[in-house]
Image (cartoon, rainbow, N blue to C red; front, top):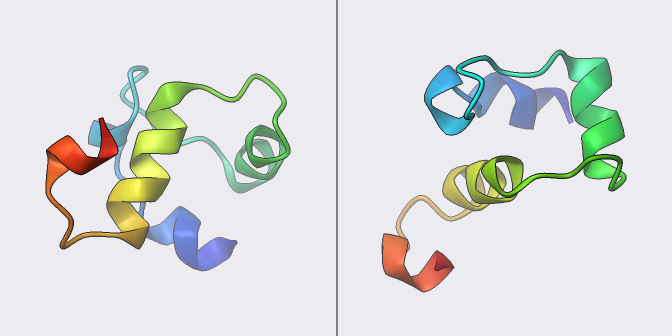
Length: 55
């Protein structure tokens, strides 16, 4: 989890800030999960995939 957190950037989020690690854990359990986090995780996990595949 901490590795993922370190790879996320403010540009991934509509708020312009990476959630704190504890909040990230809550979000990934589905609590108030938003598309910005889903897209950020896909971006980090699949950096070589074309952007349109995620759409």
